[in-house]
Length: 198
Image 1 (cartoon, rainbow, N blue to C red):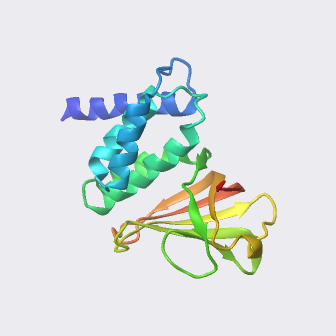
Image 2: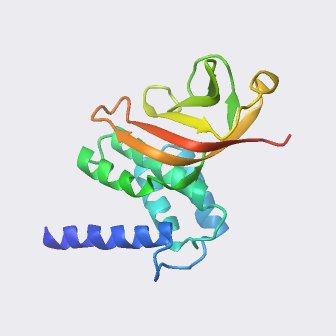
């Protein structure tokens, strides 16, 4: 039992160092193959494998790698998937999320839509600087995260309906849920919309 706790503590130190630029952090490179394997595991919703691959990428990725903000988001997302299937306790899940508060993340490309639905970027009509995403699994049976973002400036939603965009933002808070059907709420600010080039 003591050995398992020690291993978890060591892994936490490694992840914190790789992710947040702590002196002595690993500066190895994440290969294209590692990155592709992570994308495939996450896309296939092989949550436990995806968490392991994402953790390895965090440990290996250089702090100045431009993929790091996207990797942070992916790690949080696959953690939510793993938790939703009962493969983590609530306490383990909550502790794993804490280091990401205050960090910059890049969300995947999603379609801009004024209609409520899963995995769309939905503008809040009462505030042009606010949006939300209901990020779910592929079957729509689990909401992995309600994501709320405040943008740095107003965005012309009307003229970009149906387009795909990514959101760059900083995490203000992550609130995990004890429900495995609605896993967490993530609040972000300093958001920027980046439209996908056709």
